[in-house]
Image 1: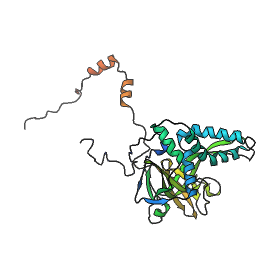
Image 2: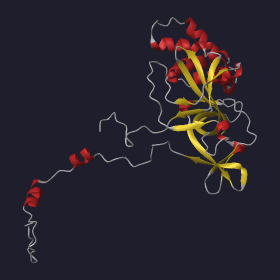
Image 3: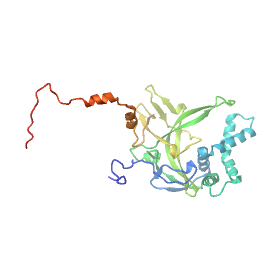
Image 4: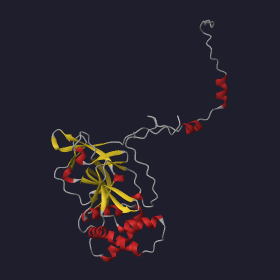
Length: 311
């Protein structure tokens, strides 16, 4: 059949990311997933916009040079402060500094990167969208509210993040380490920056370490979401989310075993052998090849059997 004819062998997976054509230069505006269900227009309060906008800025790869520049300015201005306080000031003031910096910079007109930077610097609109379902990275995510109405569970989220650890308030050499966060999806919001520029984010209830996580004697990681305090960074980009499932511990209903999973239509299979490479690596000896040609394929050590071919 022609390639454009959909069959059960070539049809898209149920949770395939949508192929959205995008002309935006900044990675945060290039949406790889898509929402399901009703879009709920929402006026976000100041705190939500501040936290969500700040996370978008610090997770836009093209802004790394601006982030480094601002951190250097803060360090020079507060050279006597401990490093963890400098990082806090840097985090809290970067958004306003970036907005003023882009406004004062003579960026070229009609340039894709410049237009995206201006939109990002202005910040998102107060009015955005909320969803209860979203597909990203081959996973179907539902909010906790939807999960409570169904027998299936799709609200488990995990992300691996790089964090800075300080041994004390006077520590000037923080240790960078990767930390797994496990969460429950509370809300899906979409920030609107105008001109078709949108950024979907997951708002989650997170646990990462301490009393809310433990490793049992069999090597299973368990999470406890009872009385979880709101995380100071509850948002992640939808494109960063991976999925986990939580199975209740039969011995303690407050604890849940964390089960990792693969996306639909993605399997942990061994890589396929490169047949061409294998054939090219096999060099046939001409003498061996000639010997094979002399092989007689008729046995002469037993009596033959005559077959009547007349029908």
